[in-house]
Amino acid sequence: MGGGYGRRVTDTQPAEVYTHGHHDSVLRSHRWRTAENSAAYLLPALQPGQTLLDVGCGPGNLTVDLAARVAPGRVVGIDRSAAVLDLARAEAASAGAGNVEFRTGDAYALPFEDGSVDVAHAHQVLQHLGDPVAALRELRRVTRPGGVVAVRDADYAGMTWFPASPVLDEWLALYHEVTQANGAEADAGRRLHSWALAAGFDPDALVVTAGVWCYASAEDRTWWADLWAERCVASDFARQAVAHGLADEVALEELAAGWREWGAAPDGWFAVLHGEVLARV
Image (cartoon, rainbow, N blue to C red; front, side, top):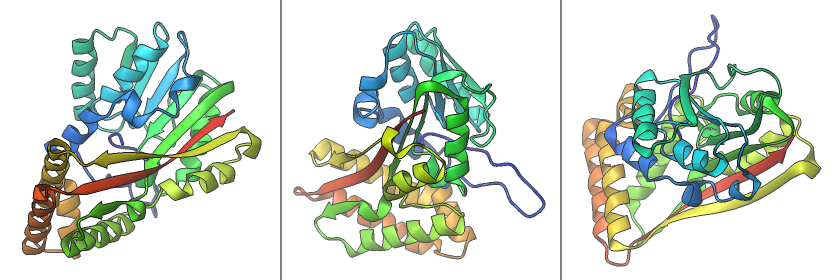
């Protein structure tokens, strides 16, 4: 996932809402992402010298990692949030990634000419958009013939964990309710194939796969549980849950406690299912 994404605003169409926001609990999750754990399906298609566009780049860690794979090719990260792009620029500078630049931009109106990039990539973006098919068309527009569009999104209904936790069941139900109120699709992963076909990609030019993040070690469980415990009380997700009248602060504190209880279980296990599509243009 990335960061923020824009939508054209009309008199009847409000601006889209990024469910997670940019609280530190969200950014810590974004900074964990690497090319290996978040874009392995794309890596065989990357070559030195390619131009790569990363839409919804957030704090830039994944962008910088991908930039190393296409260097000396040019990489541009796009995000709606100017503040998070400052973090991305600092990340690129720290990594010595001189082939990366970051710009504010809109997933529906990318600031690029037709057929101007070799790779258009979006990680954890389409799940936050009200019109993911339009965004896929835009990714295809800016990608040259023979290039690739690569998208990967979590599927919240496909997430699973052990031991059983009624509180995490409540968390998942609330997350679906909040994203629905935001006009987004939490179960995007299973829909990526369908969306790509609706966007006009050649069915014979699609490679459709699935990927998983798994948190089972004591360190990983604690990290993942603490992230979500914080998100349940301090992130934009929490504020939106209250604003939509879907939860109050007491309920959110109970969700946070449930996450920490799960994280403390010595046999705890959590898997995040992702859909992945690699589309040749």
